[in-house]
Image (tube, rainbow, N blue to C red; front, side):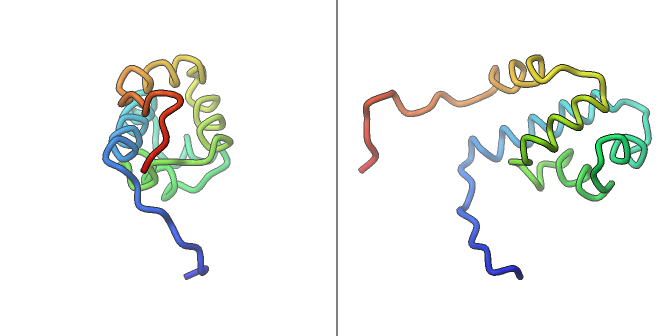
Length: 96
């Protein structure tokens, strides 16, 4: 382990990760996972984890590189994911 402590993800965060993975998988279609991963500059294992939701919050650079490799716009990807997002806590309200 690298000593980093990860904060557990909420249900909505996990669902967004699964949705992102599903969208990327659909966009990849029949293209081999390794081909898309190489084009995006990531490992096939990382792409597999993103597509399956095991990495539900990939870095922006990674998502951007995958979108470019797959020929999809970040705007379209964000819009589709936002459609499935759970509304955030109303502004001005503090937890606690």
